[in-house]
Length: 389
Image (cartoon, rainbow, N blue to C red):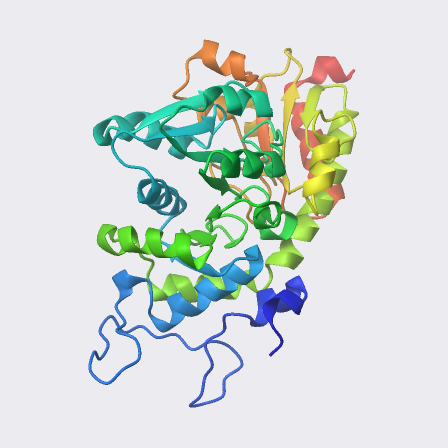
């Protein structure tokens, strides 16, 4: 097979990182369920907790190919991937810089656990270079970002972050979950470590929980040296399911991109919608930056209802779009960040971040646009009869 960097993304999704069925010549990867392997007269001593069973090892190659890196690893969850990466490069007395707007699990891990390890942190007061530069300290070792951000879909300049990290000899990390490798390859801009909740776009069917990391061999070795002791590996059955799902990721994500852009434009014109947050809209504050560093604008968006419409009642009235805590499945889902991902923040903190009670995060699936519009329209009619007259 040709080198992965010469292959198209659908070909990488389908073929790179397959386990060859040498015995029966099956069309898909065989599943190796063994948790015990020989250790004498073998090239590799395999053990599930070492992330190197046949299925684990092969899928890591697919993740690396998709993110344009040398190596990849699969974890038991997105938070296992996040925590292992952070702890691999931070120790007592070290400091990390992060944006204020973070995935709730990452934020909780930072504020609830880092004190136990003696690790210091600063949340940058914005997404611009000066915000990150001002937060740097003499003991800073890592810059960590998410882009697009959750839930307002704000964009961070990846080239700027990579340049700043190299200038100060820091390790740069990104949670690339919202974009997926289909829409964004941070390694192309100089970011060192790419992290994913593979539960989301990589899995894509709301039926598995997994995490993924892609980086250079040097950085991955450091992560592996910690991870083999922390025990965050993934069962081979779930690894096999994730490989199956990745085969269609590019097709799914591109369809979700198209749907999300159409829905964002439609919602933007609706009289009961106050504001739409989607980087593919030309009036989004980061549209030009998103256009520069993303190949697609994601299937994620958020929108704010007018104050007279009760957000919870609106979601309850939806019949097709599911009220659900996760995202990026083939089915469309919606939630209130104020009640879920950002519920641990005070009302004042949410207001400061621009997260109102009427803000809804919308993960757009692959359904027909007309059916999604019809569902939203009927929900509006249920909860806002007077405004629509």
